[in-house]
Length: 395
Image (cartoon, rainbow, N blue to C red; front, side):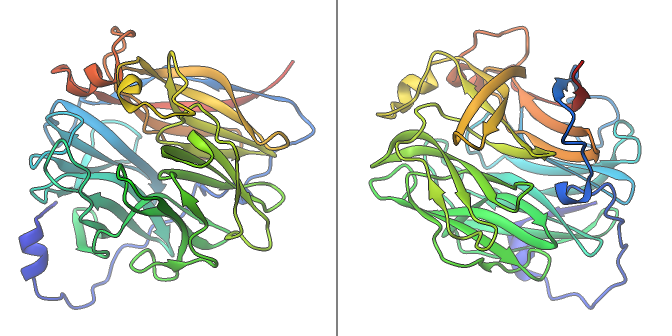
């Protein structure tokens, strides 16, 4: 297990090429690799949560706040990366841990810790030609400011043997990272987030395992108030995305549903007006012809069309499962999933044709009326769990 620091990364000489472990890519996370009977009606069922952080068998002692989580399955192991810090807000004490397990639970194996002396968040795994990599976002340490510094790219050579380096200068913040049709894709945003200007939303591709990124086609794919953007490819090849329009623009504030045709995934058309509801930390998955969204739910909202961040912070939150109505281009609530207070950063991975495993974080579930701000500052902190999203045939 290696502990990285910004000083070490800048000072270390380049290492010679090494023989690294090649991991199998099964089970595949690409919906194109799974056959679902689309003539059958399916009902989504969410399991009870299994809390893992804090939990038994961890090689690290987590701090109070455990959130921003990513999972991947490769080489017969479940990999988990997560942010741990004193609370939700930026801190120089923040660490990003990576662990793995052959059983999907304890005992956990140490993989890496990234401690830069600044805030780190937004982890995302990418598996390319059997090589597992992790991207994450380095921010500042001022809890009251949004200070993008860099996107980092870390590569696993063997268990506990990772290399890491910054690959951007802070102009962009990455969000969703996936391999689809053999292409590594990511969404990212740049611009004056929480400021007076507009944001550029990007769709990018990588041909070297996530070490470098370039526009997929037309760039940016959208200009407005959008930052986080989850995407998935529909069964007909259409790219679908759900964005968080937190900053607001001429369409209002809240969220947008966007799509791009199969022949050009960079040709985005987005909602106008925006959906006044916010679907923060969005994660999209596909089962058969259907697209499902896992994201935060604003209890007592909506956020838009004006976009009042203070009122939003003083309302309770939930995590929820939604369905994306592709014909109507609307998000439909299905049910809440475990999550209250400071909650919702879902990372999902396909395990079977009709099953996904996902990780999420939440304030203690026995405090359901906790507001978002109270959850972010509560000394009880937040915890991370695993659960399954199963699709069962309707009677």
